Structure formats: C-alpha cells, structure tokens
Image 1 (tube, rainbow, N blue to C red):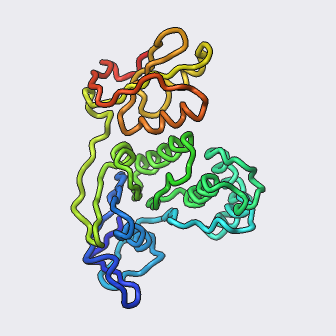
Image 2: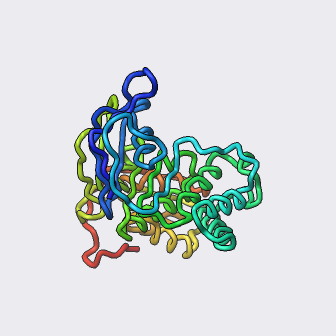
Image 3: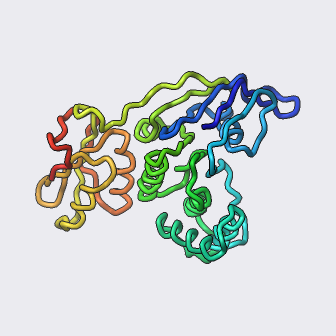
Length: 295
C-alpha cells in the first residue's frame, strides 16, 4: 500500500500544482482521478509512480512492482517496438530471452498494427500507445498507474485494456488511472476522485454497472448488409459488459450493454462497417435469473 500525506508540489516559483493531497492506494481497487486540464492529475500520478518528488509532504509505503504509463510517451525513438520492450524488460530485471518473449506476447495481445520490428516513431499514435501500455506490464505490476491510457487506442483495444485492469485488481493489485470521460470512469473504476486546482476531493464509490440487475443500460440495434454469421453473434455475446444479444429482423441484432460500455460497442460496430439502426439510453431491464447473457 502506498500513502501520500499532505503532499504539495510546486515547480520553481510557479503556483502550486498540488496542495495538501492525501491519497492511499487500496489492494484490489481501481481508482480513477478526474479533473480538467492543468488540475494536477498527471503530477499526482508522477508522484505516485516515484518519478517526481513532492515539494512537501510524504510518500510512504512499498506497493511492490509499479507499472507506469505516462501522459507523454517518448514515441520518437528509432528502436523497434520489440527491441524497445526487450530493452525495458532487461532494465526491469528480466533475462534477455524472457524480455523478448514477454514483449512479443504483449504486442500480440494488444494487436499491434504496423509490425513488431517497425521503429516506434513510424507507428501511429494509437499503436505507439499500445507499446507504452505494454512496457508497464512487462513485469506483472502490483500498482498499475495509467495517465489517459485510452488516448488514441482503437475501439477493439479498449476491451483488452479493461481486461488487463481487471486482472491486476483481481490479483490483489491496485490500478490508478486518469480519464476525462465519465462513461469510462463509471464502467471501470471502483473509486473516483475529483481534483481541482491541485486539491483532491474525497473518494466516491462506484458500483459496477452489472451489480444491480435493474441497472440502466443502453440498447443498440445493429444491422449488417448481409446475414449475420453465427460466429459474429457469439463474439458479441462474449463481449465485455454485454447483457443480451437478440435477433432483430433479417440482418440485425439488438444488443443491450451498460451505458458505460456503449461507446466502445458503437465504435467497434462502425469500425467493422456495420450500421446503427437505433440507439436508446437509460433502458431499465431485469437481468436473467441465472446471470447469463441471453440470445
């Protein structure tokens, strides 16, 4: 567990960036920090990660291995994605062969587009961000710190990142992340903090959308130019957060998801060339009695 007590931060003679911040990580928690630009979010995360020191106050405790994705990843390097991860793996204490294997495994999981041997500076912003997230996972972290981690990621990778966050928390680790979108924080976080002008507010608990069987969901009708393959319906059924997938006419399906997952579903559908026939938010429906997704 890591604790910040009365932490303040000032750069040279500028105004304080953080003011008397108290914060404590909690095993198994996913803690989101929200706030506007310049509110102090990134500075708070840098202090938690140990890459910046507070001007006053204390940082104490040893959370174990820390994985950190900064707000500005050095994407201009000439190293290839695989070489960079292999180097970072060795820096983190992995044997060379294991570092290469682990880096390759993570690049495959995040479905890097552009080639493992492509220099990072030649990758798209979203694919460079995949490398940034991968380096934080080379050694399984006990504290995973993510600064706007979804920035630039394609819709299909959103689910992969959400799964990684769940895995860390389920294993007793802690995840702390920033994001400016309420839908993301509500669908992923268990606690949300608001920071304004460097002052951190009290945590507010977030109940998972799926915890209440009557919870409000979004209902999306998707349509394809031809018949829906059975495998595609199966994939939708297994997608993160999906409550139900039911046929709708000859070439369509009606999908119900918690509202926090709706943006990801829509992006995935549009990216695949499907059309959206209808969308309704705040649909209150009972969950199946056995807790399974219906079809």
